[in-house]
Image 1 (spheres, each protein chain N blue to C red):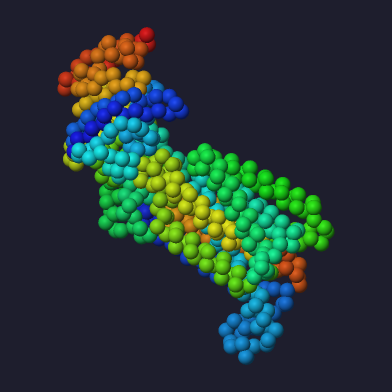
Image 2 (tube, each protein chain N blue to C red):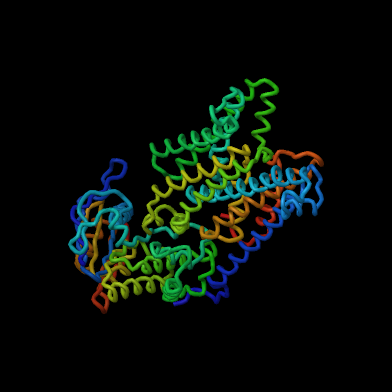
Length: 349
Length: 252
């Protein structure tokens, strides 16, 4: 009854291979994280950084301690969490919409967050008790507004991927225009602040913002765990998934909400990072396939790697300064993606 | 465990696609749904499986089946050969037991999935991705997945469409055996009338959304009916097993 020639690759071999790739990716990420902590405009030596990380505060130079613990560590942790959040959000978005171009950026969430932040900067909006959170909250609200628009359209015409993608692209263009309008209306010094925010930057990372972004990522992961196989089934198409018992529309709504949370948690504190949500899932998919049990963590690790790598480059481009990270995320991710497209045997979608 | 369908109606975009369809299938029965393109075969199967909203009454084991219950006990295999994706063959078949899957795949479930693949000669492909196997292999795989679900009712939309002659027989023999062994009810939409007649316990002929005839193949497949429903002049002879052989002559 066989249709085929012999095939050496068994599923258990494949699972082992994927686990090894994931472990190797984590190891590479760890290396990049160490480099990211070591590199910075203060030109600290390797041993200075190592002592600051390992010795008690009393035995380390106060300036070195502050630079490592108050500036570099929060920035590195934020890079990891933002990259992981956007990588996961992008993978989820591509899966629920069945579209390789879907990401929080291409569906307008980031543009709307940018608009929210720009509007807050222009108007000098300040929250009563937590003024330092005014811009992040405005950005998160902007992202949620975009999500509400896309969701509202989908409610009217059905939660299909086509409706959501069309509504998302329209939302992207609308908020990009509104962003431009706010920039046009701004005074030069305000404009500079808006543009800096829109570029995306890690320099304002604090342990509090790291905790919030990390808390959201953890919360989303917990909610995702029971859904991973249903998400995998969705890659067979809505009809097949539904016939397997997946409540497709309900699942899409739940995952859509989690994507909004992840994106809001990521862009609120660092600004618009457009590239990672799109490309990290593709890199991950080419390396480990479609099984969401592996694809989602791999997308997170890949996103974190691209973000941390971009952070290193942003500190090396101009010695003594830090270039906004949003400018360089593509610089590290695109060559890697091109290499996989050219050399990889696996389809990228 | 008889499947009873009474006055099933499906309307899409305001148009009635299936009109007051009633049918009954006994346990272990393999029924063939025939009819020309656009007769409503796929719509009827989708409505039975709960994928499309419908009116009417569907019951199994005397219990009425709502949409959720239908998705529990009915497995539906669409007529397309599925998406191109980098899911592996074993992952696809495991999805047939979605509710049993956790973060790790239990060893006995993986073994059962491998055995299900072996029954269709697909065991050697378990690590391959969907985009690296042929359309025919995909069709076999999705049938294997549907059987792996161990459903009470199996609905197949043109299950032999992408298959060569031998594998058409492989698929229908496998379904036939599964029905006999497990008491599963199978309903398959088919275009090859001779092949359908060879395996059918019951034939259901659909025309313009209505059930035109149902019963043993030799009663349903008549020259007059083929002329009326398909607009085809045909000769019908009986095989050595007493099954109708349809030889289409010309479109009228």
